[in-house]
Image (cartoon, rainbow, N blue to C red; front, side):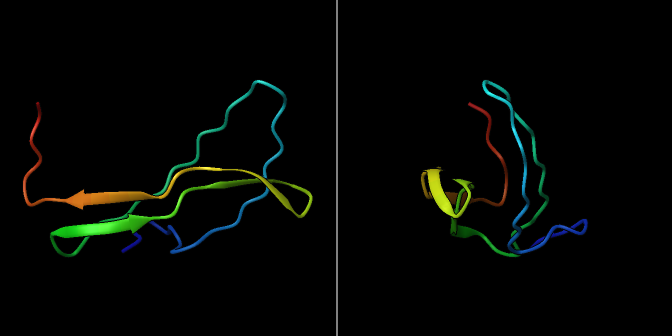
Length: 67
């Protein structure tokens, strides 16, 4: 569930210079324990997708453990 005005899905155009980075923050919580899919960001030039992150499975637990 998105919180703090984060949307379920968001498209945001960004222009980056070569060898630069940009941080984007999003806030969410999970109302129950379980495994949930997370679709990563895509990078496109014009209308063509040029890079894509790997699909992630998030493991939501009741208490965080630090190893």
